[in-house]
Image (cartoon, rainbow, N blue to C red):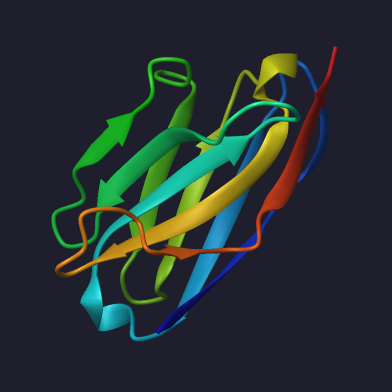
Length: 119
């Protein structure tokens, strides 16, 4: 079992920046990939970015590429999402997720943090 707690959401004007963090505790040694997802009102949850825990390889959704950067701190068991040049369409609840050894999909999720971008 792993616990994931997000922080750093808030209200920002279009063009601004926010940094989200996710702290993991518990059985973190089983982690293979950490990711960020988001869900806007009335829409399905969508993938934002992911990073492999050991190698640090990253993947981004096309919509956020070149604006968002995912990173991890293995010693602190945290994963962050630096979001720049934010747009109103980035408004959503952002979720941290973990995939562990043997899982095909992300099996552990945080409670989410709200990001609101005003125009």
